[in-house]
Every structure is written in C-alpha cells, then in structure tokens.
Image (cartoon, rainbow, N blue to C red; front, side, top):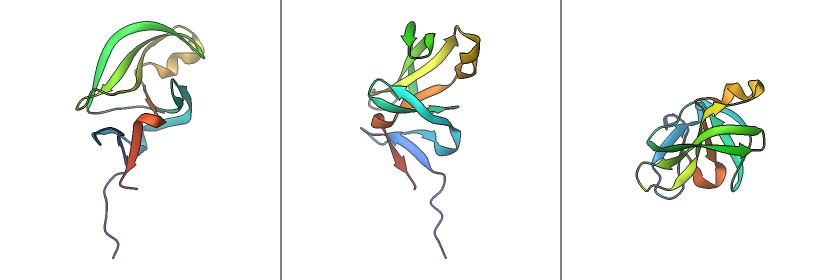
Length: 106
C-alpha cells in the first residue's frame, strides 16, 4: 500500500520553510527578477514588505516584496494594485520565483 505524503508544497530554497501549496498555482508563465516565476493565489509563512510602484513587463503595479518568515530571503512579491484593467486579476496574488523555492512531497 502506498504511503501518503500529504499535499505537494513549495518551500524556501534556503531554509525549507513551507511557503505555498501546489494547488494554489494560478500560472507558471510569469517572469521574475531571476528568471521563471509562478503566480499563486495564496502564500504562507512569509513576511510582506513595504508597498512600492514598479514598472513590470505588463505595466505599472503596486507591489510588495515577500520574504521567507524564517530566513528572510526574498522569494518574490505580492501584487497589491494593478493600474491597467486587464491586469486586475493579479491583485492580492503572489509571485514566487522558481529559483527561490523547492518542491516538497512530490
């Protein structure tokens, strides 16, 4: 009988703190500062930094960097506000950069 490992997770690549569930991925087609990134509906065990306006590939957004709650490594950012109507779906969502996370329970 196969042993159940629990939900598939993503963890901080530095300290293995669990930061998101695989089931919360909205898209794998995003670009981060360090390459490929994933858009998540939720994130956990993170600290949200101060908000700032940034010009990203898809226009101007208000974002806040997100950090691992344990080791404080920058993992990506949270979309706080999108100024273009076509980008509003990102508001309240999280970008986790692929280079900053590892798979757990796969």
